[in-house]
Amino acid sequence: MAKRRKFLETDDEDHAREMRAAMLAARQDQDEAFAELDSFAELETAVENPAVSDEEYLEGAGLDVGEIDAAAERLDRGATGDTRSRKELVLAAVEEREGPTKETVEAFVASHGGDAERVGSMLEKLVRAGELSKSGGTYRRL
Image (cartoon, rainbow, N blue to C red; front, side):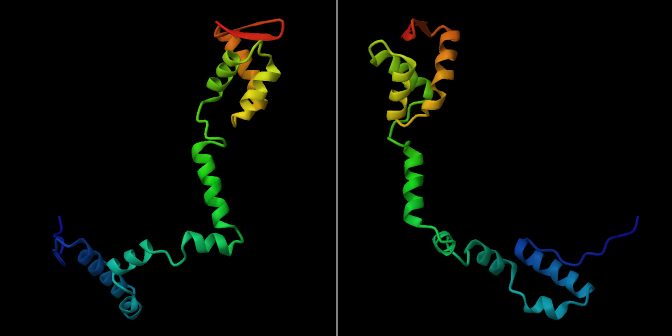
């Protein structure tokens, strides 16, 4: 086996990167172009600090940053602050309403920020699972 030549030994990762890049640049006759570049550490710092902040970017795209922040907050806490799942909302509606029908459950779910369009399928699923019973168009919890 041929012996490999040892060019440089260092414990500093940045220094090793710099030397390897310098050798590759010299091999391709790009010494001058490499000399004009900043060090790897400086380039990493430049990448970590973006030239344009998120707010500047959004405003440049014609978007209202305050409105976006408010929408994100609403999404984080739910439209009305109710964090219950759809199933929990449907079950709560059945328990709290007198003779709950599909329509009254839909209204309850909608008033608590849930998706009223999917209430019918959730009611059917709960009836099949044996958590609710349906009689004469009204539901009750089992």
